[in-house]
Amino acid sequence: MRALLRPRAAGRRRGPRRGARGGGVKLPVPAPPRPFAAPAFRTRVARGGTLLRAARWGKAPTVAVAVSFPEGGTSYDLPGREGISEVTADSYLGGTGRRTALELAGAVDDLAAVLDVASGFDAAVARLGVLSRDLEAGLSLLFEVLGDPAFPSEEVDRSRRRQLDLLLEQRSEPDFVARERLLRQLYPGHPYGRLAAAEEDLESIGRDDVARFASSRLHLERAVVVLVGDVDPERALDLAEAALPAAAPCHEEPAPLEPPPEVEGLSFHLVPRPGSVQANLLFARPALLRSDPRFPAAAVANQALGGGASSRLFQELRERRGLTYGAFSGLIARSLGGHFAASVDCRTEAAAEALDGLLSILSDFAERGPDEAERERGVRYLSGTFAVARETPGAVAHDEVTRHLLGLPEDEWSTWRDRLAACGPEECRAAARELFRPDRGVVVAVGERALLEPVLAARGPVTVWEG
Image (cartoon, rainbow, N blue to C red; front, side, top):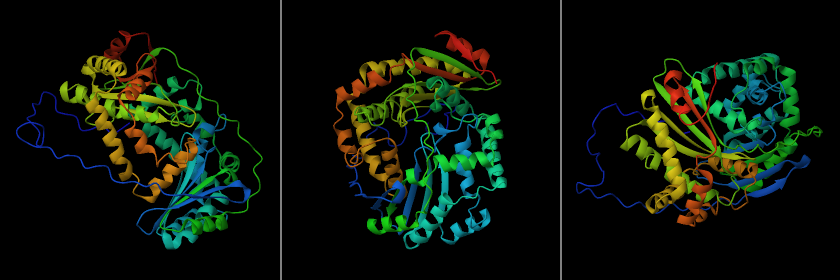
């Protein structure tokens, strides 16, 4: 969810804002969206089956490299070893067969490069940012890290402790606790329902577990390598293919991930937080795959509903009624599923009115969809920010990794703005009606139990999560 804006002081009267409508002030007319021509990718399949993709993009003398391992994400954690994907990703920079962690860090710094490995729900991704002139050396270093990791026991232990420390920090945040409980109910029994690992699983992970996970799930023959930046695409492919290490074939195939189960009905959940003066309210329901033809219309409708400060949720709950610190919504895509979510943070004493307001706005929006002004503003915003968000090679490389991971067509980004512009009122109303209605899904509240439990109980049975 978006970071919340600073709350308005309670009871404070605000005068007209500078530049607001009225008072003879003439607002500027928005400029047309910046042109965007999607880069043309070249493709090659290297030895062993590694897929290579390269494109020239950007004006700065840099290249971004992303290596995606579609079976290396948290959804593929080993049984009884939840969190191993994060520990493994964090351990890659602990040294190689040739270099210690300190020597590896020095080699990265000598290139003025950035190199990291991270794990998400559906994949693990290694990223390299390097000057164009140093691409060959940077690729050599990247594939040394990925192809010959040492995973020293002491470095694995440090990575595991970092994950444990991060978990303690995250669970001190109400918003994280709310999302953790929400996902568990929205994706029952499915890996998508796990936002963080259990402490006991993290404690049990050792060096051999990490080495096994890396060799079976983060194998280069099943990776996708994307190179974007100030370089001839054919030269980039040549350099990448030459740098790929010769590796033994991987014979261990992970079990395919099953689609998440359907969720029926609307359930209410409370996570007590004694003494809290703030309530965190979240709603989520199953939505659609990113590859669904309805996604552009759903994106426009969501932008109108809760995509920013001009959206209906924000304007109604925060600006007009002063109930919340912020109110937003979003569409979250996974490779085998997706959901719609809306969040409200408010004073505890305003929770009943804020929850009623949130659900009633969702119901009304699902029934009627965005009005014409909201729809047009949503299309303008999504079209206008699209090119700006793709100015860097790293952003374009990320897009290509995402496109491949989610099974999107080759022309996904070149046709995106045209498909947004084609989203008429009826398409947006239909998307809102099918995807945003709060008739099924999960509502989670975090805060003072004595005050919040009656708010939820007025709408249905409440499950209280202690501890």
